[in-house]
Length: 92
View (cartoon, rainbow, N blue to C red):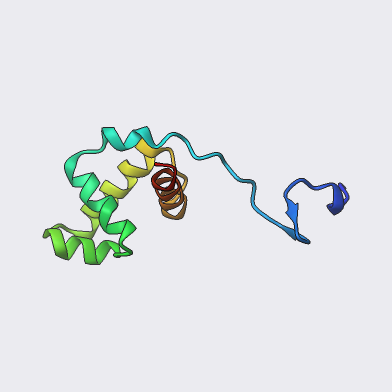
C-alpha cells in the first residue's frame, strides 16, 4: 500500500478527491433555451421541484433537462456541474 505521505492527493494532512480539470464549458452554447433556464435556476440554488413550479413543468421534466445539461457539459453530477460553470464564470 502506498504511503500516505507520497499520495499526491494529500494536502494539509487530508486526502482530497482527485480534481478533474474543468472541461471547457463550451457546452453551454449547445444548451436549449429551457436547459439554460434550468441551469440558471440550479445556480441560484433552486431544487427541481421549485424549478418545476416556476416554469410549470413536472419535476421529472426538470430532471430530464438536468440530465441533458450534465451530459452536454460533461459533469458527473450537479455539484460538479455547478463547480465547472462557476469556475468558468470566474475565468471570464
